[in-house]
Image 1 (cartoon, helix red, strand yellow):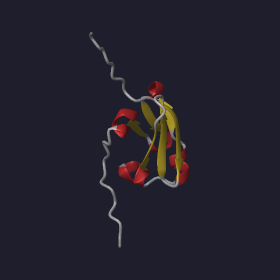
Image 2 (image 1 turned 60 degrees about the vertical axis):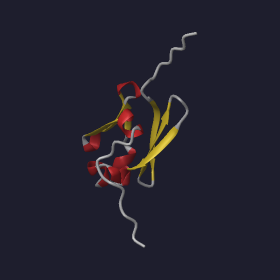
Image 3 (image 1 turned 180 degrees about the vertical axis):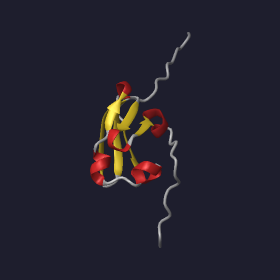
Image 4 (image 1 turned 120 degrees about the vertical axis):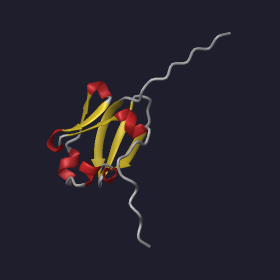
Length: 90
């Protein structure tokens, strides 16, 4: 018996922001979130600028026109961020 499996790239169907977090709902039902501060341009953006996120390229990319910033959904899901997590002060 041969079993064939197909891997597909994650595709976003919804994107939103809340308290400097960007959230994505994927076609497979997952909802993932990441801090805006993990990307250089997004880390300097206001809440209103972050909220202007749009889904592009049939769900494969996120776009902020007002910031001239693009991220791939696959990159976000894989955890390919530009900046390290900020250290928490004790």
